[in-house]
Image 1 (cartoon, rainbow over the protein chains, first blue to last red):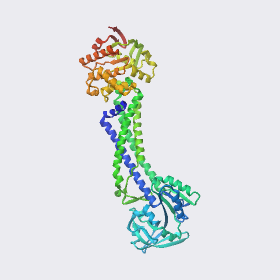
Image 2: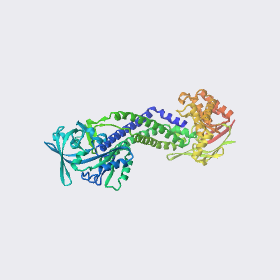
Image 3: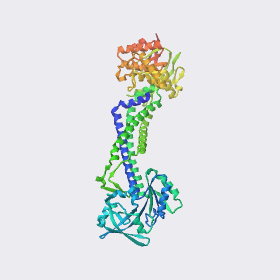
Image 4: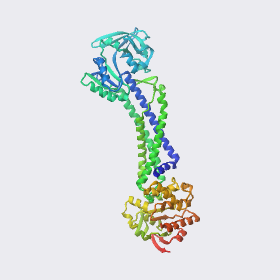
Length: 408
Length: 227
């Protein structure tokens, strides 16, 4: 206890220097936590959007669909039964949806455009999907003849709500087409997506294909963190069947890769920040040790063992580290709170929205607390602070009492 | 009982290409309960001899024993234990830990000895009272006068109940009145508690109070006089 008291008071000897060092650690930790949480929030949103519009946490597709790059002729046979089987095989709660992705040509009276049509179950997709969030004008899908298209596409085709549109697609060696009426206009804010996307009901797709078969059966989990177990359970359940079971990472490889690269870059920046702060801490301890050389000589003379001097220096680092990192984490969490609650508007940098990793990212990015990672980095920061004090502590343990006491 | 035995001790210091011989074959014996002053001009080897007896430095040749334990045979760790348990130090510049109070500075040696906190505090307070610092226990060194700081240093030196206290110019930074009081204090501790004191000093008042005076010159003992 006296050693701890000694360590704490030593830190207060040169208050200004200790406070500057603490401020550097607090600032570093706060900045690090803010970055981690902003990244975490944007990744969560990216995954949520990707899962809600293109895949699920667990995805069942026709065998070879992924390798073919999304050949819309590769279908899940008996898709309604597969959906039931998926729902039963996964123990975590969630919603199973069927989706059909088809590419083709959408024509109005004046113009035509290539589109990617997503056929959805209107009720379920409204509940867990992302498309409904983009509905700007008109109404959500209801019947077989309804179609929703992106706002840029609507301008290009020069159509208004209620206008007729014909969708034509290749089915095997033949062409098939169907007449739709524009029920609503979707607007994500990302021009490329708004110029390409269209949505119809599964009934509409069935009318086109002449079958219930779809390209994808997906499960969107209530708790996204359960996906690894859910995927394993589905893989076991569908073993031997002519389908492929994928995780969201496999179904959305662009998003997964984007997150990995972005997180890696973020960690690189955080590591550089950590090294800079650690050098500051190292400098503080080295100065502090050099200033007290004579005192260490006296302590050695009265019987303090070199390892006890090392303990004092490391205790000082521990006290400094625990206080600064604790405070830094609190400050970081407090600074992040507005970004969690209200988000940060990046529209001046990225416009209304942008496509990232194949999914639409809103310009309003919300942070999300990532406590496990924040605690991990706090522990890492503490280790780094202690490491910064190791060399000065070792140097002290090598002092000769007589030479140290001659030091001025 | 012999506390210190110094036999044929030489100590050389190398500075660049030059070797300086600080001690040239010193023989000295200190008995328990002595109050002894090492006198001599600057550079005569007093502090060097004191450092060697205290195990803070190592002789180039010769042997030094404290309570029949030869110091050269001890590892640095055991030497630390010996200093902690058997030897007290008082330095010219007080050398108290500035961030600790008077009682905490006094407790430091007891902490190192592993005494439990209650016993530590009680003994430190008792020792401070014995050096006349009752009521000043919670002051830090910068809140004490030079004389009071040196009294705390004496308290720290004797709190661990050592067999021997080595004091290097303990009165050099004090005015004559405070020096006299400090000498009186150490003399009383020697008489009442039987603490053995060895001083390295220029101060004639210490010489007057000492029961034995050893005169050094050029790294050798020139005169050894017991009163």
